Image (cartoon, rainbow over all chains, first blue to last red; front, side):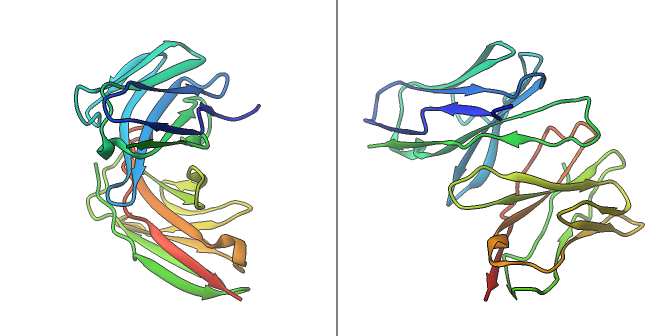
Length: 115
Length: 110
């Protein structure tokens, strides 16, 4: 398996623009997570899905952020409108509920810069 | 969710054994203890997970005392490539509501 795939790897955009981050989880995994990492706040869980259904979005910072998972192999995290304080590395991770350990597999991340 | 406390940083030399201790005084009955490793510009990578006593895999060992209020990650004979941030997490049986703390920055010197 190719692992968790994220695109784009880098995104530079201007304040006010819409940004869409994409994630393809590992095939067969039924959990998907979106994280944000900054120097100041560390690694924060934004939202996670189980079987394509959002389970907990309490980490989503505000209404400008939204996440969807239309099917088991694809998820998006959208920021509209973007602000400079949204600059961070965004990670997607997936996990299966049938393994011996509850291990999350992380993607390479998307580095977002909002100017 | 149980909060975890770890040292901010640690230094070691190549070939030494490194032990990183994590405190989790409010761990719940259903909570597992999980450790992740993160290199710069990469996502975290699972190292080991346990519930009680000792767990060992090809990479590390995890020691958990009977009261489970702390745990120790043991890395045998570290190398320069083990320089990374190590996170201790405590979560329920699903392990899915994960909270990453600040982690421990391990510097391995030659």
